[in-house]
Amino acid sequence: AYVVTAACSGCKYTDCVVVCPCECFHEGDQMLYIDPEECIDCDACRTECPVNAIFYEDDVPDQWREYIQINAEMAAKTPPITERKAPLK
Ligand code: F3S
Image (cartoon, rainbow, N blue to C red):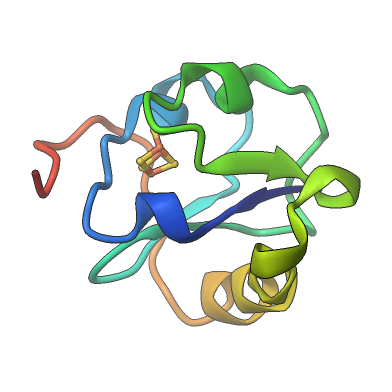
């Protein structure tokens, strides 16, 4: 699955959401999360993010590895998002 990491926090550009062919994005207060159960590994979102916040799980940089678990946990607790919204900054 793909993983949303720290660069999304405080941003939420949501460019990723509109290219997602399934409904794997969930919205937290400060960032988005990808539900690893829903993600089909299509790679569409990764290249859309203006701040390069999204990585394939095997490619997540060491300092952000914890986000793999955070995405799985938070996606289960937050509502799905499927449409573009105004970013936080
Ligand atoms: Fe966040 Fe980038 Fe999507 S900033 S909302 S992962 S386009």
